[in-house]
Length: 140
Image: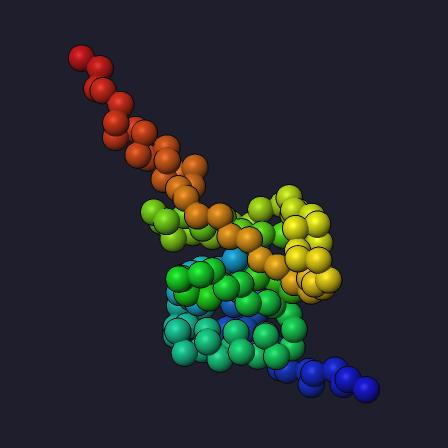
């Protein structure tokens, strides 16, 4: 019989880190969490962020998002099944809604799919817009 994780005491640091993850509406790296949470708690350190991430993972409050070739990201637990887009220019990762695949249909006959991940890589709208602005000829 599984037991619930022990209740952990709330601290300013933990609250700021949890808010950063939950309010971001996208997966965040530890450095992004530090940057966002530091606006509330200026003395926050990366070590504290990593310790708190471990506690939040243990308590199943957040989940780990693995982006191939990139640092781990974290997002709130319990989100609907979805995939991710990773910008190769600014390193931002965003959620994609839903799942476009019928993975059971493409799995080999007799195989049972229990999980899958799809990550799209490219340039986000902000980076594409910035790049396009640089290419625009200047008006005279």
